[in-house]
Each structure stands twice: as structure tokens, then as C-alpha cells.
Length: 252
Image: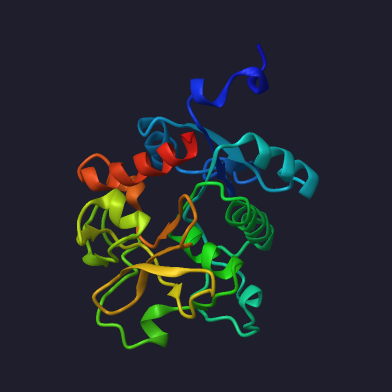
């Protein structure tokens, strides 16, 4: 029996996960395409089947993939090329820029928004979500703002380290999933939302006012979060509820 002949209501939702490339630490000439297992495990635990979407596919192939998936996960990763949000000068702190990945994720995000397909965007994905719809970013929060909160704890602590609280906007999909007006989160980013895209609304903010959650009003589920819930699902039930809410939406 082919996948297309299985009724959607009788199978677990398929979650397309965009993936990036990385050179092997053991064999420098070998390149891998994938994403950290924490995303895969969180999707499976929430009831979904993860399907990795690699760079390099043409638009017609991406269209075919998009038709087959029930939901889209856009994970964390390197920085977005600032030329995509109208800035030619690059901050010295930028790392991991990959225009090919940017274009892949912009395409998939715009499709998910336009066609009402459930989507969860995390950290870099949260920033991609904003830029894809016309927003801009702080290239480096610490040096470009007067933030009193340290956000870039990458490599300073474990990925499970709780860095600060975020306030959740009532009435949003994010609020319904998390079930609390304030949640504690990790923080592994040095960039952040500067100008919010016109189609988006703020769903969460950090103590310094940095936008930590965004979503499309009226969409079944199009949510972005700046933190990394996939690293918190084992110890913080609200983060598992976020993945569960996303996968459940994809199942509908």
C-alpha cells in the first residue's frame, strides 16, 4: 500500500524538517546533511514522523515534498545572510551563513503560511519566519541593543540551562500550548527579531523586551519561538506540550 493511499486520519502526521549541512569532525572531506537528534526525538515523542528536507532540491521538488508533509519544522542553526533583510554590512559576530539554506527555508515558510499548513519554527527558524514575511533582525543583540539580558549562552552552559523567563501573550496558540502566562526557557542565540513582519503578532517577550515568540493570527498553527524547546521536553512538560500541540495541529 502506498503512502498516498493511506487516509490521513489513520496515520501519524508527517513532519517535514529542514536540514543543514556540516563537515565531519572525524573526516574533514565528508559532508553530512541532517539536524540534531533532539528535534527528531521531540517530534516522534509528540506523535509525528520526522522527514528531513535537504538543501539542493529544485522548486518543483520542494513543491512535491510540501504536498506530502502534514507540518513543517524549521530548526535552529547558523545566521541568516543579512542581505535578505536589506542590510549589506555584516556584523563581525555572524556565523554559519548559508544562503542556500536561507532560500530553502524561506520558500517552505512562505508556503506553510500561505497554504495554512501547521509550522513550528525554532531559534534560527523563528528568525527565518520573521525575515521570510518581511521582517528584520538585530545582527547581534548584545552590541546593537541595550539589553540587560544575556541571550547568547551558546557553549557557556548546557542546552538545558534555564536562562530567563518569557511572558506569553494571552489568546495565542503559544499560550494555549504552554498553559501558563510565564515560562522559563534556555537561550542560545545572539540575533533576534528587530522589526516584526506585517503578518505576524508577538506571542512572547523576554524581560528586556526582545521578541521571543511570534505567530500568524488566524492560522491553524504557525508559531516561532526564540528558545530551544526540543532540549527541554524531558524536564519541562510545557515544552513537550508545545510539540504535542504542533503535531496535533498537523494531524488535523
